[in-house]
Amino acid sequence: MVHEISIQLDRTPLDVAKYPVGIDSQVQVLRKILNLQYEDKVMVGLWGKGGVGKTTLAKAIYNAVFREFQGSSFLERVRENSSDLVRLQKKLLSEVLLGKKLAIYNVSGGSRLIQDRLCNKKVLIILDDVDDKCQLNALARCYEWFGKGSRIIFTTRNRHLLTSHGVDWNHMHEVKALENGEALELFRKHAFLGNKKIEIRSNLVDGVVHYAKGLPLALEVLGSFLCGRGEEEWESTLQKLAKSPYKEIDDVLKVSFDGLENEEKEIFLDIACFFKGQGTKHITKVLESCDFAVIIGVKILIERSLISEEKGTLQMHDLIQLMGMNIVKEECRDNPGKRSRLWLWDDFLHILSGNAVRLVNV
Ligand SMILES: Nc1ncnc2c1ncn2[C@@H]1O[C@H](COP(=O)(O)OP(=O)(O)O)[C@@H](O)[C@H]1O
Ligand SMILES: [Mg+2]
Image 1 (cartoon, rainbow, N blue to C red):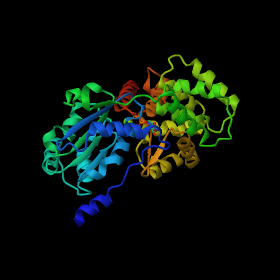
Image 2 (image 1 turned 60 degrees about the horizontal axis):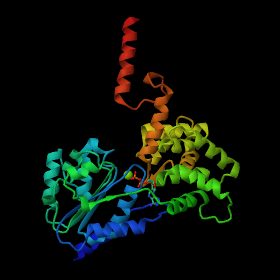
Image 3 (image 1 turned 90 degrees about the vertical axis):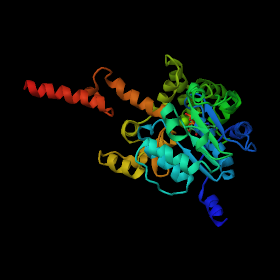
Image 4 (image 1 turned 180 degrees about the vertical axis):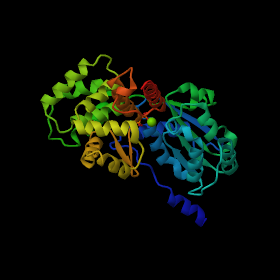
């Protein structure tokens, strides 16, 4: 009994979103799908495009129900971390078993251990952003791994992955872009920070919101970018958005990058290419050695919603990171050696091999 209580106390809710909009109604819909009264096990899939709010909704449902389980784990960014599945297996077990560290030497050993330890426990497991069957196989292969009443939730951009893992169609939920009213609400929260005195012509506000196509990520970045700016700047932003050829999310996000000062751009690109997910203190120290005013730079990037600080690390949405990496690639599409940054091993080898040839020639 005492042990159970301490388990409940040790588990803490997750930070959902800076200004949540429309989440409660989505949580209600998901609750129905999860059907917590049902005693058997259920796997549920949330799918939708990047930046639409899958991770956010998954965190909200986690917070709403995790206390009803004996153990729970929310594994964020599975795709990005999938080069080390053993580490993810360790994290899953240590979260469910509250800090107990178990030795795992390989993925199949890890799978066995998860099944062994969790098959009699009622658990809530959320695997966020999965994109490959081997991640599912390593972390939540089948119902037999978990105890009665367990709920396993996946989020993904690939609906087919859910089908192929045996998630029924009536346990799938598409996370859709925000409706007009909610989109406007989220945008205004970021652009005006609740200040009712700011007056920007409504056709300018509606014009900008239109380009975000209801995508929370784009609404957040555009709103944060325009926060504190006058109508003239709103107009020039609209013109810029109207010019971009494809009007993809990348074009929308890039408006915010273009509006940064040079040094902030450098800091942003360094984080996107090298430092995402690392400790804030470490990043600050490394970048300060490049003579950047890092503390203020990082603060501005956070204000613009381009990065966020989570548990002492700097994080960035993968679409924003991709935008940053594309900017560097575009510096010289054909020749990685002429780019300002290299982060792929293959590009690095390509350049080294080029140098070796030159040396031999000398
Ligand atoms: N309903 C919402 N209300 C407020 N902010 C949201 C909402 N949904 C998403 N966001 C914000 O939009 C951004 C992208 O959402 P995220 O959940 O990471 O998208 P996905 O996981 O689908 O790529 C996040 O910064 C998040 O805080
Ligand atoms: Mg996500």
